[in-house]
Length: 64
Image (cartoon, rainbow, N blue to C red):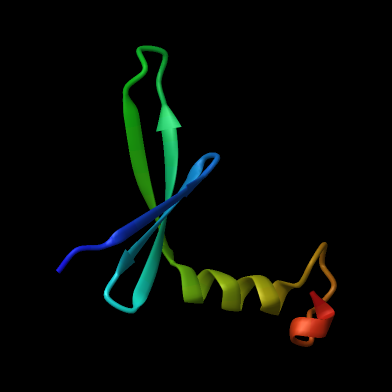
């Protein structure tokens, strides 16, 4: 089964089945690319909503 990859700036999101995973893309001075695993996208979003935008808790879609 294949997967999709979405790249935005310094982050890459990979789809595996119904799940999405986030990686940070870094390049060294020689141009070599290193990907660092951050975590599952759903857990990152849950944490973001818990912490809130600029420290203010979000109460759902209207609070974003």
